[in-house]
Image (cartoon, rainbow, N blue to C red; front, top):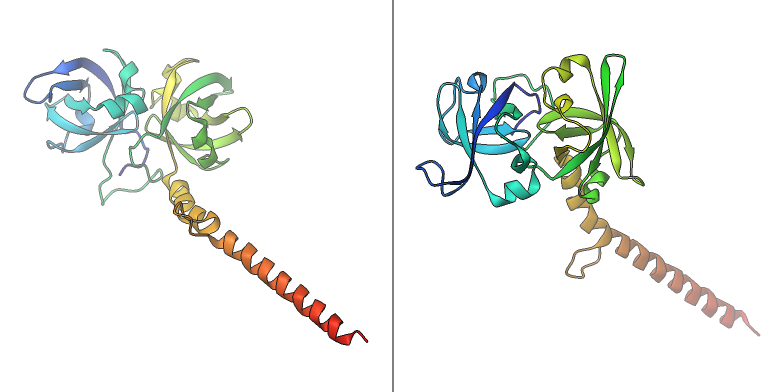
Length: 245
């Protein structure tokens, strides 16, 4: 679990698409340098968020650490677009004794988004983003939480018809995360607020019914209404018939 409060910006120093070393696992691996602030209490197997993606430390030194990237991670995130020299947002997994400054972030990226505009206003910066998978836009609400490249941010506006939302970065945030270093057309990792997904999963079957055909609350409500209406009409019809001469 993470908070979305970026601790440090590291830099990619090595990428191997087929790492057959003892810590490479015969797959895609990445080494992050200039990472000393997030390694002071590091152990093998620890979780560190890289651009909002929860990854497992497989090897580390005093200023660098190494992670493996699965095919699913490469499909879901922008990590496959990184190059040697790219800066990345870093955050260690949440400790129980620290102040919780952001929001509940799992480090499980839902989709990527394309930056479609970057507009300065005084010393702040508007960033407009279009999600690659538009179905996730329903979990994004004005003044709600969003995690972009591992940064906990507040949504300003949402346009469902045009498939975009925007955020505003203050000057301090701009100097401590990687998003302002990007340009229009670049991708960001998006993790929507997980509370919205849990609520939907719980409420939708209650309202609409289960996939196995069992009716939900709305189905029962409509059925009860129809039964009562039909019963009332039948009763009234019988009363009228009895009163007829």
